[in-house]
Image (cartoon, rainbow, N blue to C red):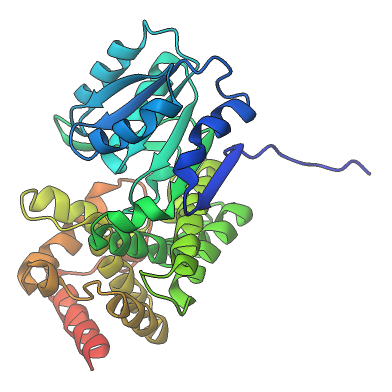
Length: 353
């Protein structure tokens, strides 16, 4: 009988530990990503300057490029600037906007991307997607998975704590996203990739149930690994379904309806995940999720991120329009504003008691 296998798009290197940044040059050389040392390094104009000063002696052949922002135009400009440099690879060194721009730019000029995360705000560090602002608001652009991922926990600790908290919300939301995927399978027969679902769910469960806190290396390692596994799960599935359900629809709606007031991505999807879990009738799961978010200092109700009840109800009603064709508990229940308001009041009472 033949043994059937499949190739899984994933990084050749995942280095998560204190001090990992100091070995970046060795990773590039030892893994044959860049023998010549001619790499393009994309950094932010702000915090990237300090890291550039630290790494320049170890990367003498590197050319440094500042990322202007997080728009599609910024990414195209970055690609245009890099394309004549005869580089072996692109290193995206920074937070989500820098890495998303670098991923898109590297794909545009046909070079592998090494993601070096300086914060853990969301699962974009290893995902096959770049989230970039455009004229219509915000778009998701398919890109290759990074060839390597480096997370230096010492650097992570230097970033504002809100970035770690945001990553926690994004990782935990996987549990709700996979539950929505399973709902779509039961109701509509949507195909589920079992490996992608298992990987995404277990990444979320590991963060949800870890007893440590945001100051522990053990917890930060599990969170980093969870965000990497979320990205790989999306690569396996070929879409964002393993990590994006009603939780992300609600977050996208808040971004679109209240663009100048939106909170951190992980804060919004965390609330969205706990509320969506409540809507699916899993009250114990919703309470556990809310308790975990609260323990790590994340919000669990809309008022904690500056939205009143009516604004949140409007966002939930609008949410299905942000991902046409995606089926979640929101599309399944198709709640009226009054029903959403009732369900949200019930949710607030359940998680606040």
